[in-house]
Length: 324
Image (tube, rainbow, N blue to C red; front, top):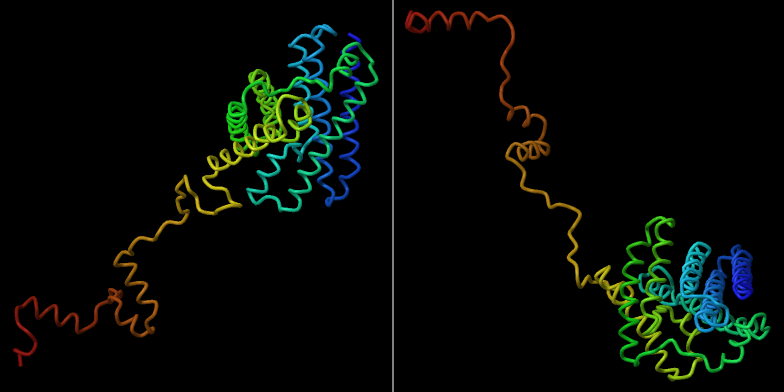
């Protein structure tokens, strides 16, 4: 259990450092990209330790696969809770840029900060391993230069694996982004843990360019360009396909919707009825013409003498003129 206790202490130290960095720079909105640095540093540094437990811990520390899966889920859950507003993932930052939610300069600064955090996390993990606090870390310190790569298939298979996983992940993330944090964060953590566990025999499904850079780019077996094609180009391709399927277009590139027909919100008014047309025409006439055009109203009151004479003459069948 000493190896597990040392790992838990390392996790706690990394999380505290990331929270302190985010808290110190929260007062200055211009330095919001520093939060991306902290998020990427925490994710890569902790994932490197989990990777150490996967490679060495099973026979050096007695830690099985159930422990590593649980620790990975807890890491992703903690990262989602503490990283509110940040992702530590360059693909998600570029996605906001393509959605016109961020400018070019903030996007470039955020991506640079994420890769810087990933690189410093590798240096911090190597220093921690060099302390050789446990047998597991002593073995890891001896073999870190000859680490095993996460890419266990060909470049073409790895590209399509990462692209398919990124496509599904970004589609779900786009549908959940307006949901409550209590729903979104656990579901994303479960999804990433599931992908990492299922694709461990292929590419480990990082779907995060800076995370892949920190975990496997320094391992022998493939060139830097091959790693970039599998873990960078595929992630961006899957993200753009997901955005195209979700919105029907990519706002930064073109505004026309290519996939979905958008119905107009306003209805075209139908033809007016004759009565409404008459009323509408009468509104533009003078007052005396409106009165003359209106039908005569029935008279109310006692009958006059002319009315009585006309009624008597009509009853007798002769007019008043014939009596003269």
